[in-house]
Length: 128
Image (tube, rainbow, N blue to C red; front, side):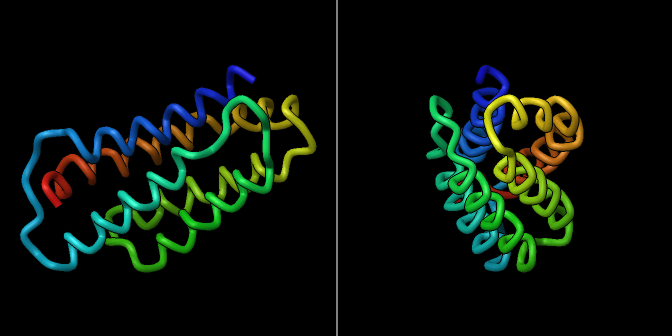
C-alpha cells in the first residue's frame, strides 16, 4: 500500500508544483489553455484514494491523461501518454500486491514522465 501512496503523492506533488512554482507566465493563449487543462487533470488525479485500492478509479484517471495527451503541447504529449498508460496498467491490477509490483517495475519511466510534465508546468504555467 505504501507504494500506491507514493504514486498518488507524485501526482499530487506535480499539481502542487504547477500551482505554486515560480516561472515564466504563459504568453500564448494556447499555452494558457493547456495549463488550465493540465491543472484540472492533476486536480482530478489528486483525488485517487491511496488508502483503498480502486482499480477503476486509477484507470479512469489514466484515461484522462491519455485523452489530454492528444491535445497537449508536443513537449509533453509523450509524457502524458506514459503517465496514462502507467495508471491504466496499475488500475488493471487484480489487487494491491500486483499494483505494487507494477509500480516497482515501471516506476522509473513513470517518474521521468512526471518530471517532464512538472518541468513544463514550472516553465509555462505559473499564473495561468
